Image 1 (cartoon, rainbow, N blue to C red):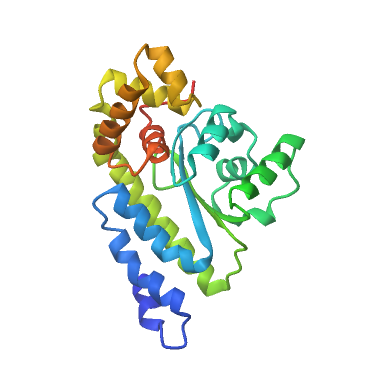
Image 2: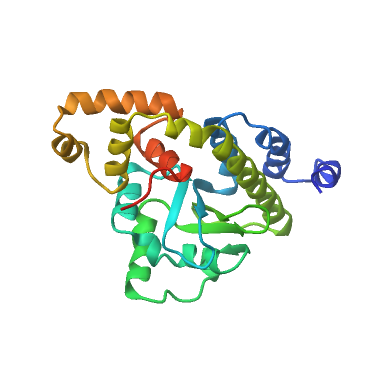
Length: 252
């Protein structure tokens, strides 16, 4: 399919489509999650996408527990979302777990509860104004879903097909890297580092973590530096996301 689309691309093909097609093969061979996410955003930013979240759910029949996710969400939104367990009533997550395929968030029927409606309003404050999700379950032992969001997403049929291809490549490579590099890296963390990640995943700020572990805040910062280095993460939010995505750290 990729070869057909690339061969069919011409000067009349939108530049963002040509650019995205040129990145598919690189994305499918990425050696690390850091580069993988960089290429995904490079390919999709011209389509209005600024935020992504890759979920892996252990049990296709249940939304809870979702054991892992990888995203570029802000620290504030990640902590708020996880600590308040918003995934339990997130209409996007529920739709992705319920059925495979692609869907735009605007096509989801009215939120089932006031909390779900409020979640959409909160998400907009963090730049998640419109979204597109690809959910798959046939090729991996868990339900996987990639949610893309940003400003208004308006694509024609060709563009939606290219975005879907990129999403599929990202999920496939991401799941491979999860097994080959991410899980071993998280397992290699010290018990203290894993505890810090666990507390952070549950919404605790550094001050609370330091108090719970009876250590100085400066020591916490040193731990975060080592955690980021070991996981190849850019910041605290990505460190927590990678740990959750590995399935080795869970929300209490």
